[in-house]
Image 1 (cartoon, rainbow, N blue to C red):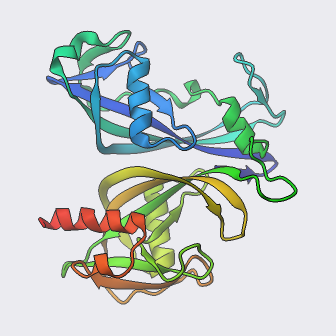
Image 2 (cartoon, rainbow, N blue to C red; image 1 turned 30 degrees about the horizontal axis):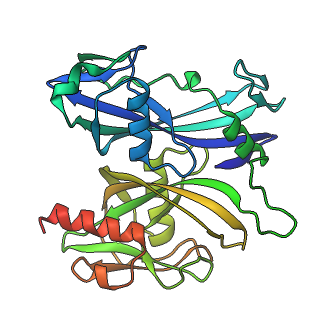
Image 3 (cartoon, rainbow, N blue to C red; image 1 turned 180 degrees about the vertical axis):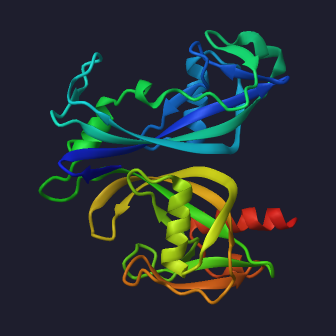
Length: 306
């Protein structure tokens, strides 16, 4: 995702980390941190984790759910990096969202195959790579500066490459109703229902983004209880402004509780939401849900024990 911060281009990206445990130990790479990879355009978080593990010679593993999310903001100075990547003279403001996904060994017979990684005692805090050590790649610089391959041609038929990080909240009331929002005419799916949520601003933690979006779209104040899922979707289509995009949506789902259950009210009038409502959980699958909302409802039903 590219934005503008002052006079400098801005880049938002997702870094996935694999927390692979086996027999009470944790797999770390040669630097003593969790295997990691910058999520490529169109890549699912699970595939990114597999790529990170493969890079350090890890044994086969099955990705599980998210464990934690951290973030960092820094400035990548202008100039030519050691790997030949040219950064604009003014530099690039980089917002990295670090997502830790659990993984488990699928074949314990291959547990000792990891090289150059090694098994280590599990520390109190999971060791993540220093953000400054995650170099900005050429494709990322191109996205941030608007020079990515696929920039729109004069005919508007060449899709713009765009990766967007968003956060959504699964909010269930004590009487088992889920908080949903209806998509407005400004969206590609008007009239369908989704979870309250939306894009993560540059420099914003995804959890904070979920809380903010719930308030803007429903008037509800919520407290986040934990992470549920990190998933993605990749497709080509028209944005609300009519721009053809090669779109990679990366979505963080959190579980949240309303501090006070009351009638929802859309505060951000004229945006992507035109109505918000508490819907009985059992009736939610039939109201016309988009994919992320369907996934959220399934999480809610499982948490209830269905």
